[in-house]
Length: 414
Image (cartoon, rainbow, N blue to C red; front, side, top):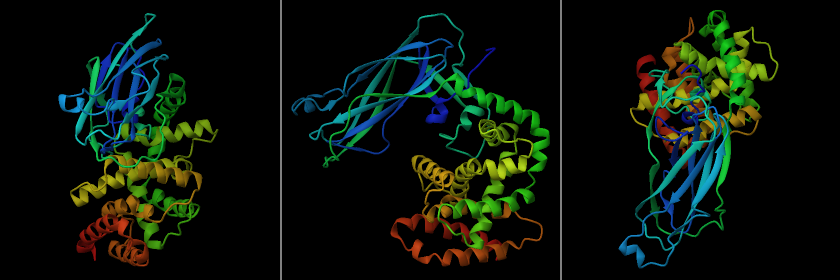
């Protein structure tokens, strides 16, 4: 394919396996947790136009089949605003269609499934601008959930689209509870990406490639670490968190580890640098000082990457996943938004997962002359001084994770 738009679906939801119908690729997702009878739940349908010309899309919602047992109950059991939705995607556009489904209070708790039928066509002839399969170019990167960071647009996470007109979506119903009130059932379409959104990233990618040979040598761990010690303290202070010295050390460690790790392969370098160069271009900032770009202008982006890596490092150290993909993304977006806007941030999000990640990677980021045992003791003192915070029952898992990872490092270095 001579010309190709980036895959955007993997930036919205985990879409390594998806469906293709006519001119669009699509994938729907229902809530992970059971839905209470009597409530309305939203289904997200992501649509990606694979053609350089507009595509007309018809979506039909097929509600769960009513079995013999269910026919005895008052009807209907489920309800939508309308079953057929018609929309048009512009050239290469990616969008999300939110489909609310009403579950009536008398629906019994059990497993159900509904289906979405998707048909599409183009009025004009045009080139295909997205392939049916996409190679995974990031390799075995440690970031497991890239959704929402726009890096899956920059370096492909890989996908395969199966030709199909219908996707069956399973979901669970739990016991009826009192709903929070009347909810809107009208479908909502939101455009997520058009080719115009890619222009600045394409230019930033070219600049990152041109400057790579000069930029990467500027990002030495020692230089990056010292800058992060200064900048992170100011960043968290603006959100109401006064860091102890030990906390600042381990936040700087995870941020430094993140930069060092992301410089390990060219595709990962793009995930680090391209969003920062794009932001610099949008805000008319100079781009010749890579150290300033990464540790100051692009600090919030580095924090987002560090949160994603911090969760992965903690999981590897604990040999299990404590927080789900949905919870991890929610934490990442909340922390990045709070820090970026200078909004108040609860102190536990200093630890979850930045300090956890810095602790897990402590021996991978050591400055000349650093006594890692002493660094661990200072962190121990800082955490002990937050005893009231960690006494909260809701933070039991965070406290468990910290103590497990700390004990492992302490056995080696204290």
